[in-house]
Image (tube, rainbow, N blue to C red; front, side, top):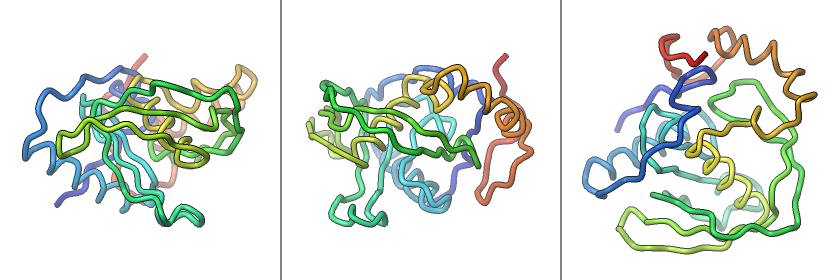
Length: 186
């Protein structure tokens, strides 16, 4: 297995909607294994394909190390689609491996239903709530080119400006491999 460098704020692929996966083959299975290894190496709980430079609708989640979530097994979701969101919302602080050191309060639906393909090519549908639902929604956002700064109001975004510049310039402390300063958006 291998670690992928994580794309960080400024990389073009993070602002794009990524493409569906047509075929689940050995390469995709290896990518999933490497994504889990990369996520765990960075002490993350979720990682989307474009966060490792892949134009693919895939993400992995492992929240089992989080207190109260030990019963939730690690999961890989391919070509996911959120089909229902609750009206009830919760505000909670979020971080992101693609935004080292940045944290922000984000409001999200408390419960969701999501359909996806499993690595075994089975169509699945699950209902998720609380922290699990939040992590799924965060990773799903990546697949549609959205990040934390897109989920806060203008006032909060202004407060982030200087830190976003530092992240964009790779001028923040980071304990995991990140992409080099080569692929920026305007």
